[in-house]
Amino acid sequence: MKKTHEHWASSVGFIMATAGSAVGLGSLWLFPYVAGENGGGAFVLMYLLFTFLIGMPIFMAELIIGRRSQKSAVLAYSALTGESANWKILGWLNVLTSLIILSYYSVVSGWCLSYIFMSLNKFTAGKSSAQIQEIFTILSSSSGINIFWLALFLLINFGIIISGVRKGIEHWSKILMPFLFIFLIALFIHAVTMPGFSEAVKFVFYPDFNKLTSSGILSALGMALFTLSVGLGVLITYGSYMQKDQNIPYNGIVITIMTVFVSLIAALTIFPIVFTFNFPPSSGPGLVFKTLPVLFDKLPATILISAVFFSLLFFAALTSTISLLEVLVANFIENFNIDRLKAAIIASSLAFIIGIPSALTYSKALFPTWSEIYGKNFFDTMNYITSNWFMPIAAIFITILAGWTMKKEIVLEEFSIGTKSKWIVHPWFFFVKWIAPIAVIIVLLQETGIINFNR
Ligand code: PHE
Image (cartoon, rainbow, N blue to C red; front, side, top):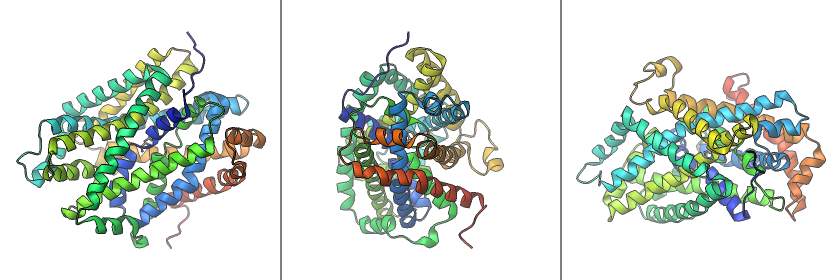
């Protein structure tokens, strides 16, 4: 029943799969709207700093942990710490985080699927801009329809995951990722010509620190980790499929730059539309789903552009969710000694069940008083606890493992195996050992109010 551990067929395959995990709705949907809600420039700057100073070093640390141990999170942590049971808890936290993110992320991915079909049915034809925007409200609050798309989306993930690492994940990432880049650039070129472009550039790049709150800073950290897929074991699992001659620092830098590039391009494509049509930049989760269709309706070939755009959002989402599902599947296979098919059935079913309350959030068909009690709706609560708490906390422990617990020689050796630029190893290690954990701890303490820099 047990097969030998699979590996990526090529370096390009690894980059596409891992960039596929990183580049997703986080960059294309969440980043623009959260930046909009947090006032733009200063938030964007914090996001960039956190990505390069904290996210990227930990990204590389996770790959090292995976490649060294040849295991996924739970057993990777225990293998590298002399079979410590306590470290396994961190692995299970990673699994839980992946499950929760997969559940609500799939609901948004379901919206993308729905928008593809709506586009093909010319859903914007003859409607005013207010009516087009209203459709998002109607869709997001329709219980049955949300559940249907959630189930279908998870089924597609299931279909890919059961084919394994090379034939499933790598194969599909290599097909989907190039399309995503081409179409994003094409849309961006169009956005550059819009009257709202210069205002958008100012909004995204001009930092007004008065608009930045401590929870805005925490969100920027959460966003940096979320968009890089750091702090929940995805990169440990994907690292375990890496070949020894693959270059960890180089790949880490390339994928980080790709991710940041997509986030910024997404914001610079969406905000020109927002400003040109006078929408509020802080219009929340509906931003992409409400604003872009209004633009598409005004362009020639509406059906084509709209359907292709939402297909690309869907592709971006899919390459991210398969990485989340793979964390669950790989950990279930290793810990419960079951085969891939069984693990995939269990993992997808769990994601579906946990996804139901997220799918029903806007219709209030389940937990109608959740927002009154917890201050955020169910969907936002899941997003908040995972990306603002579980991921940063796991990130701290990953730095402790790579910077303090593991033998330094082993960490440095694994880091430098595939690279010629050996000088990079010491600055990287310093960031993992000191800068990243201290910065994350400060941000978390500030958010809890234990320390306060605003006084
Ligand atoms: N990085 C993905 C995105 O930006 C989301 C994700 C988070 C995927 C964590 C895997 C793990 O959309």
